[in-house]
Image 1 (cartoon, rainbow, N blue to C red):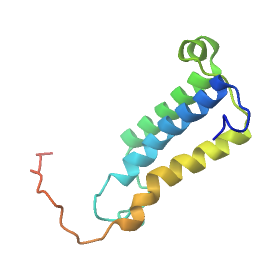
Image 2: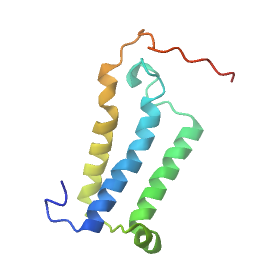
Image 3: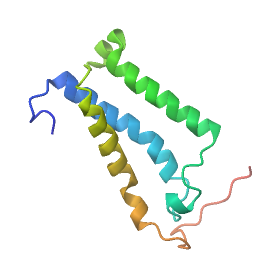
Image 4: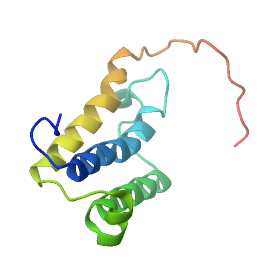
Length: 117
């Protein structure tokens, strides 16, 4: 996609890397319930641990792209600022699409044992 638009390989690699990493906090929210859509499962009320994990992922992603030694180690280069909006959009679309197919009240195909809290 971005290589076709003339981006250098290191920038395109950083773009894909950012999409992969920034979709993870969204995946945490989506996987809270396999059957109840996010908007019916309490929305985005997240625990401090989940918020902390999401913050760490964001900081590490931005650091990997913009901090010289880390970016050099991973062969990444900063991409245009407008690309960050595309990163967020692509991460959201590729992670949240399954929410439309969740059916409240559906039973899981395989019963999993409940773990003690």
